[in-house]
Image (cartoon, rainbow, N blue to C red; front, side, top):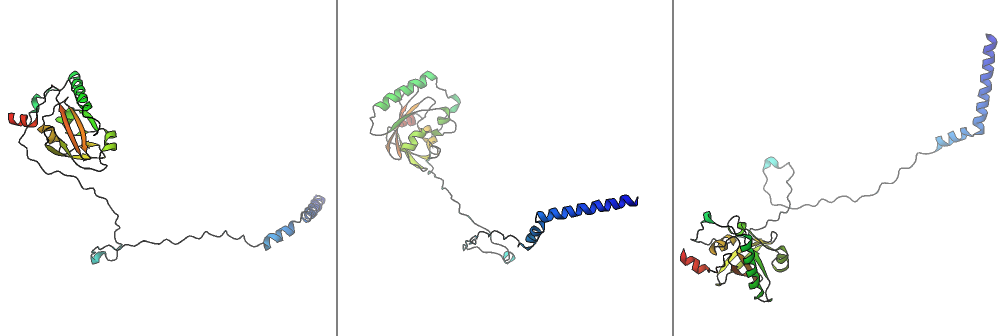
Length: 233
């Protein structure tokens, strides 16, 4: 037992000597000392940033003493679009829509052909287009959508008032909505005063930048003027 322990100690001492010799061959003590003497790595320089400059505005706002210690509210610019309005035009004309008749495809096409024939006689001095009336144009919402291509090329880019001039030279102001490319307020009165019906074909001739000359081709072939219709009421 004593002999085995002495043998183990001798073997352990031999291995320690061998390990020490290997460490010296690898120069590990020098590397360890170099790491201890080495200074900590320098941190990378931070990018300098310009300080933010707060933009202040003087706003004439009356504030209560209760809110004197609180931050003032922030404001931003808001763009308001003024709504174009027409002066009310009194009219005694009423329409009985209970007996209204819808145009057939044949009668509608016939009115369009007549309107196109009339359009061809107007020449090319002023831009023109033909519009066939639908129920929504003459009895429902009374909104008349125009050709977007025609509006972009020929009409103003902003909302405004336009004039519709009939064949008797009477004028009706209407509101033109540029973004929606159509006629809104005032179109209903023009439609009612001229007793427009589904299938009627209208020829619009732009005689001035904001003035349309309007020719009406009835779906039933009649060509009554506003004055004749008014006399019969």
